[in-house]
Image (cartoon, rainbow, N blue to C red):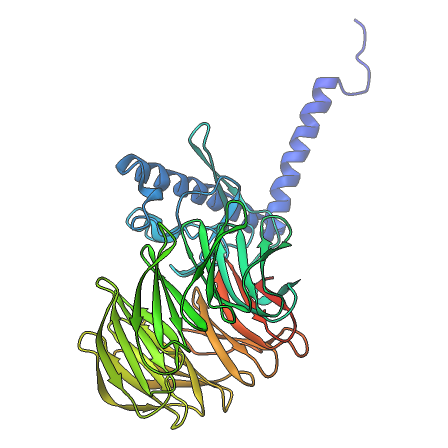
Length: 471
């Protein structure tokens, strides 16, 4: 009988290697618990990913158009390109899935978290293929975003004395007082800038549909821009020295300071359909519901206009010159920079209620958000926070020098500080303030506007727009 060779057969060798590899994996798992934890996180992440997909599927079965309904889904339709699902700066899907998920499942592998419905980042991307009507959910493999903070991310030159900013689609329209033009910024095309010639000294703009209306202070007109072609359709003659304008429904209201009246423009025909007399120094206007409130700075009064009838329904006498007032609920908050107080007007009766609310020095701007009203105090670099349910100051927050306009994004309040060219950010829950974001020297930020997940300031002295975003 022939003797076998002393070596292993191929099958024996493969079996041996497999046994050794299995033992190595077992030993490695025992001595490397981090790997075991990571494997558990991956398994949970896969389950969480499927949970979101199933919740969306069930919601679509219950109501096929639910993601297009702003009541059912405030975030709007599911994006067609991969977008991270998070409360700020992404696709805020959590409110859309209330009742389908107790809380948002997250991607544990890549740093996802859920603190609250308005404070989460799943680290999952979502997109919809319109051709197949399918929803794709996958891990967001970009750098973990748990430590994101706001920062200056871009500066866009737009020439002399930029004023108000109005967004239509992916484009921003900026009134440039100093060059009699409107700058058009295409945010979908690397913030490229083009210009449209308008009237003399363009100041405030407002949009209705695909048209932007711009008040030209020095030539008593309103330019109408077609945003589909970025051309001026018509220059509408209004009163003398038009300043602030506001849109309500299909009408534009233009306050004319020198002629002491308000022009009403029908945007379907782009013609003036009414002229409403107000009082001396008419400058600023805002609305609470269907009522317009016009600040008459020289007459120390506020004219109240019913926009359904375009008629004056009340005149409120004051002891000071009103300027940038702000509404919240059924109240109007009016800063008095002569006494450092804020008065409150009940807009159902158009009467002053309660006692003046003491705030900081030289209050000049009121901004309502949530249940709070934020007052920028230009004289001492603070913001007073008023609880609108009690009309008392609940916090005084130190910001930069010379705070002017205020706006909000998510849970954050953004304050433009004119004197030191910074933007301060206040947390609306804790009133904690982050270190001011510098926009550069001598910028003079005036208007602050929120568009999508970005905050824009028009810098009157710098001739540019600053863009603040998450980094």
